[in-house]
Image (cartoon, rainbow, N blue to C red):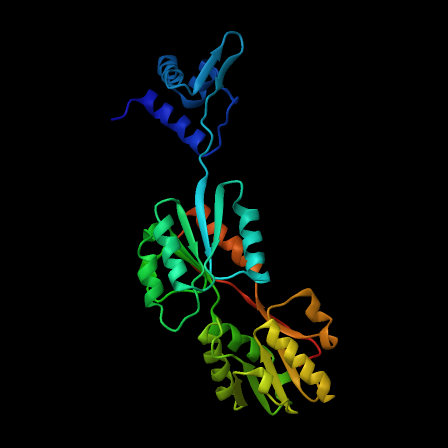
Length: 327
């Protein structure tokens, strides 16, 4: 059995480690501690002497006992591996840093959707950080990515923005559920969409967006008996009356808006348009663009929570629909 005075010592050490006891805090006198814990003066004196021996306690004649020499908390080292830079990745990054910067040092590397560059970064840095956060690229086959991240210990690895097939390779994740998200967003607008003849989504062949978006789009259209189409080259698309266009990327959105303005059709009446990812400007365009978007700020905050709590949760971030005059 552990001696009682060592149990007192351990309890005080735990308080120090948890941040409940800090440098300069005044400890109870021997008499007060004896009374509080219902222990003998000899037991408390031995505990205090042990704490003085290890340097956690100092005594000043006439003033009492003080906590001292608590070593500074060693910050975690975290590596962020982003697949690309964008305004929405910046929102994730800023929210993550605001939540975690007091507790960790964070490095950011961008591998520009290059599998070879991701592999090189992981090989170079795998042993240098306490935690790794990876935004995987959107490719058809996850196996090359999984082969790369195997170089990182699973308990150190967190996945952001989407999930990977082999969940045993990483500890936790904060992600978008792409198929469910777009299906739910379109379902919430189903009554508005009924006045149109068809839905079309702009999805270039070499896009870095998740293929699950297409799955959810097609599922909604089939279940609700909408005619639908997939546009791979928006530059070649002829704007058709009675169609709702869904744009994932800002560059494609600009082209769509130009074509709509040139056609003379009225959005919300002749045709509809839905844009991915809310921005302040979109409420001004075409008298208000309808948007569907994940909460990128929350995504960054939730990832910080997982790291700080060393949690193995897999958290889907909510998806929001903002209906405006364009549908």
